[in-house]
Length: 84
Image 1 (cartoon, rainbow, N blue to C red):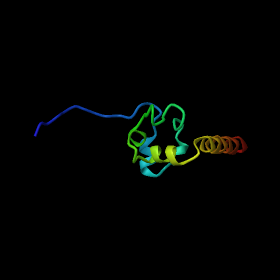
Image 2: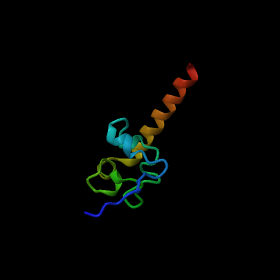
Image 3: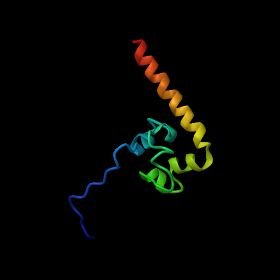
Image 4: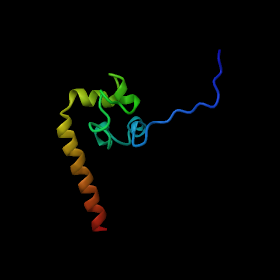
């Protein structure tokens, strides 16, 4: 009824909601998850909504354990790059 033109919406820098939605990464694999992006300080739609994938992971998972898992995966990936 009221056309709105010229408006674009982008996620904040570093937000990986798009990758989570596409299934490319899991919420805990996002660099912002549990750090800058929490239910109290959400960066993207998936943490804003209580039904969002990131918010669900945050509420029902052990966030510290997921951070350790993310760090280990990042380290393993960098070690693979060093071997090439």
